[in-house]
Image 1 (cartoon, helix red, strand yellow):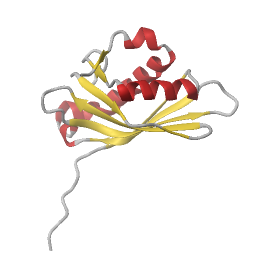
Image 2: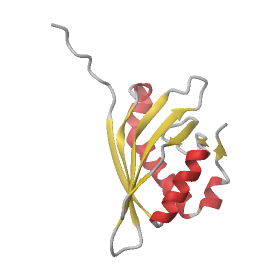
Image 3: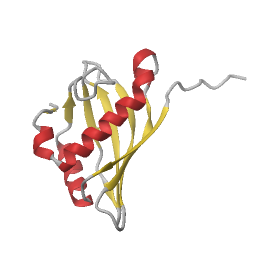
Length: 147
């Protein structure tokens, strides 16, 4: 009998709030889908390296938007650092949204510093996304569109 290999990937769940509406979210996700973002190390200090943010086509519902997300190493290999889903949920009586990420680190992040900092890096990424949606001109000016 052969033992199944144990995955070193770490499950991550992080949640924050965003000052935006679902229309803004969908527009931002569709723009970023067509123009993936290249993030520098200072955008995600816990990650400490450059990365590319890739998004899938968002799925919408009455009070929610769901979108797959991949954060890729900006190096030549382009290894996947983490993947999962972004979820934006609107409260029926409040203006803010709940923004959450549920996913896992990829094999490239399972050792050393990156492994220990994965939750912090995802928290920083969610804050960056929330700020970018609510103030797109100010935030995306400092980000490069990936080629």
